[in-house]
Amino acid sequence: FPSHDKKVTGLDENNFDAWLSLAFCEYEVGNEQSAYDALKTAIRLNPSDLGMWIDWAQTLQAEGKTENARDMVQEAITLNPEYPELFYLFAGLSFNLGRSKEGMVYLENALLMDISKFPFMFEQFPDLKKDSSILALIQQYQRK
Image 1 (cartoon, rainbow, N blue to C red):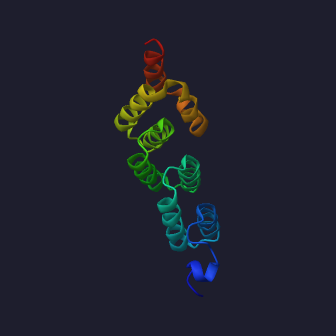
Image 2: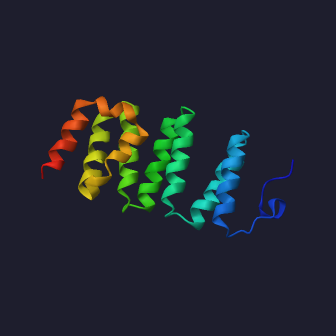
Image 3: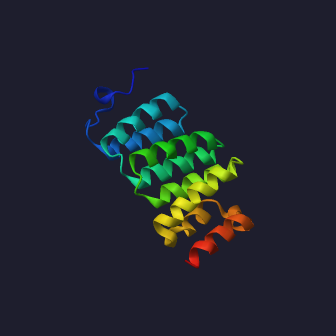
C-alpha cells in the first residue's frame, strides 16, 4: 500500500482539520503509525487546539492506553500551559494510573488556574468523585 503522505491523500498540507480527521480514521482502522504521523502534522499546524488534545487523550484512554494518553497530555501542557483543562485531564489520568501524588500536584495547579473548571475532571473520570482526598482538596480551594 502507498504511504499516506499529502500526495496520496490529496490533503492540503496546511489543513489542520483534514490531518486530524485522517489521524482518527487511520487509528480507527488500526494503522497506528500512520495515525500518529498525521496527528504530528495536525499538532504542528495547530498545537493550541484544546479539543484535539482532549479527544485524542479520550480515545487512547478508552483503549486502555492511559499511559500513552498521559504522555500526550504532558506534551499538550508543554505547548499550552495556559489551559487548566489539560491540567485537570493530566491529574485524572495520573490518579487512574495510581500516581496520586502527581495527580494532586496537577489538580492543585488546575484549581489555582481556574477552580470553576474542576467539574471537567469529574466528567472525564466520574469515579474520582468518590475520592475523599480529591474532594477535600477541591473544598479547600473553594473556601479561599
